[in-house]
Image 1 (cartoon, rainbow, N blue to C red):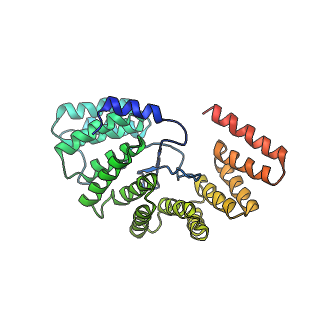
Image 2 (cartoon, rainbow, N blue to C red; image 1 turned 90 degrees about the vertical axis):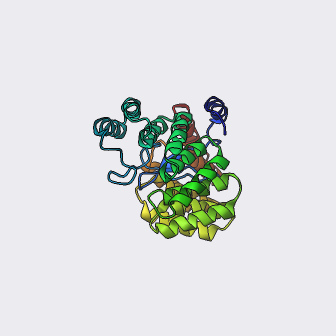
Image 3 (cartoon, helix red, strand yellow; image 1 turned 30 degrees about the vertical axis):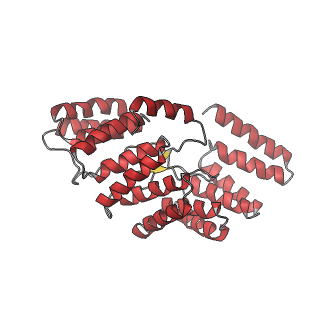
Length: 305
């Protein structure tokens, strides 16, 4: 297992666009790995969020620490994870043998993209509560963001063993599927996406990931069917349109691809990748003026990122 300082250095060296996997917030409030391969993984208006915590579930905080915990969670949800960490640290100090303080603080560290710190807390949470599927799922998420896919798969697998049909199951399946994709194990990824889809039939996230695998395999009809359904399930989000545009482009249907890029940009005007892709299509169609306008806009957005 990698120590925190080494892990942080390795992450810094590989933290460039297109090489490291960001996790995205899913509809149910959990973190989802972002896909590569030219498609865009689902994300709403925020990039990173704390994992969902059930208010009355088995992993709720002890009643002896209601104030610090409630304050920390309120701060986390209001967008102040640094202040939330202070409150969660007080929870830990009050009851250091309770895993929940570490789990909540890890969620705040993840919100701040301090994933090595989150992993340290989750390691302690797992030591204190070895049966916590949530802790394994969260640590797998952090490993995945850092690009340690084998470690992520091991944690997701343990989370699924502990909770084969619980609140963390679909999350773990989709994230493990993405990790398998990064290790070029597409067949295993498809098994996980299919199972996530079976457990949650309206999961647009699972559809988009599965469609991405089909796209990479050249199964355009299957990919298009998944992206069509994802668009229907999430019409207000830009990623399904972008993904379907990529599929249309590879099918040679450039006008339909441009229409979807248009919609993706309308929904998310700062979508540099969509401008770049649309510019390439305009160039293919011989419209140099529009192509250059899109390339210029993409450069401006990338420089301002």
